[in-house]
Amino acid sequence: MPAVLPPFTTWNSFSSPEKRRRRRHQIPCWYASCYMYASRTHPHIISASRRTDIPAFYTPWFMERLKAGYVLVPNPLNPLQVSHVSLRPVDVAGIVFWSKNPRPLLPHLPELDRLGFPYYLQFTITAYPRDLEPRTPSWAELGATIPSS
Image (cartoon, rainbow, N blue to C red; front, side):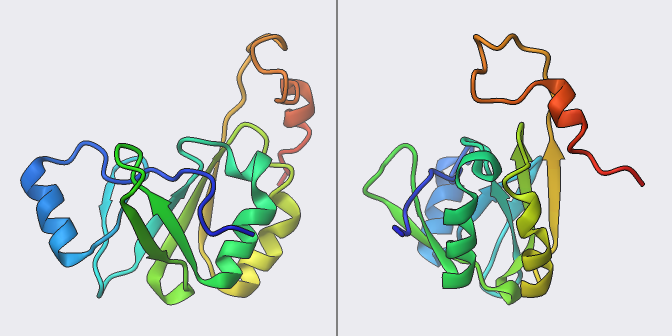
């Protein structure tokens, strides 16, 4: 499986001096609900699926990337600029999944636990009509996906 796919979010909304500083130190940056600054000495938070629904459409690819221990991240504004981001458990503080259909990911959660990755799943249910979101299950189907405690 290719290391580059689907596009992750990088280098968003940083001033030019901040971008230059990060490039000079080769520090990857990921966007979650707030900006998380990564460094070579501190683990980083992986925001999986900000621009595409990785749990719904790319779960097998993502699991392969976790096993490989890295992902190549193209800059959305400059596709020739590609960052190598470590996905080793010691380098990852946590993974944030954003999804409208987490069902393909759910069978892999025990494997994420076994590999030592902390994770958080942001589960979005919308009431959009089927013609706007043809590949998203209905809210009633997704409601049954949520485990009861």
